[in-house]
Amino acid sequence: SQQGEEDPQALSIQEGENATMNCSYKTSINNLQWYRQNSGRGLVHLILIRSNEREKHSGRLRVTLDTSKKSSSLLITASRAADTASYFCATDAYGYGQNFVFGPGTRLSVLP
Amino acid sequence: GAVVSQHPSWVICKSGTSVKIECRSLDFQATTMFWYRQFPKQSLMLMATSNEGSKATYEQGVEKDKFLINHASLTLSTLTVTSAHPEDSSFYICSAYPRGETQYFGPGTRLLVL
Image 1: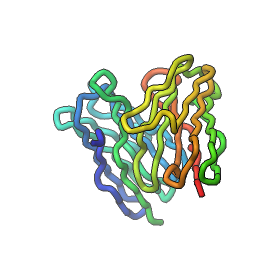
Image 2 (image 1 turned 180 degrees about the horizontal axis):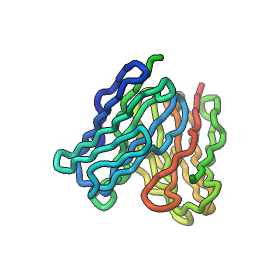
Image 3 (image 1 turned 60 degrees about the vertical axis):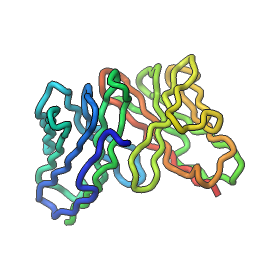
Image 4 (image 1 turned 60 degrees about the horizontal axis):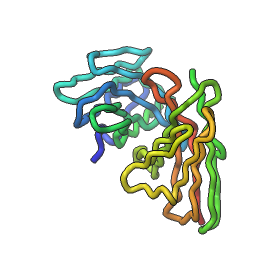
């Protein structure tokens, strides 16, 4: 079964609104990373949060990690049409019996 | 940032032919690279770990004789889809860790087998 699972699977918002995506995982991890993928393209690394961190910011991105609940969230503030993409969380659980595992992703549509 | 390239970006081939996909690290050396495949509107599934100078490690359910991996140098890994069939049509993505914990991905190769 997949290690990371995002919800919602699809999200549609208006430009300027905030978008929140959640990710849950099953095993212990070293870190959790969020990636963006535009349709038919490769993955772009957004942010990495380590297991001993609770929150990280990067520009309009805010990531939280709750290891007790085995969950993470990605918040995109003041969304733009260019943020339209699929967003994946990936857990690095090397040493805990798994390698890099991706969740199913959230497809975000930001409407102008 | 680190750059990973793939070639070709897309390929169409006839059923039964073999297709080679290259993954290169352009500004760093990678002793390990990873190969993923992705079906439409689905997530990435790790196929195998490519190790420079040694055999690749395949994930459960991935046929090593079907998907041949060769990591001939510190900057190049190749994935050959042998005797391709329509069900092999997919988006193939490679990645590498240039340093630390962040994995960088290539732009992907779209394979269509007719």
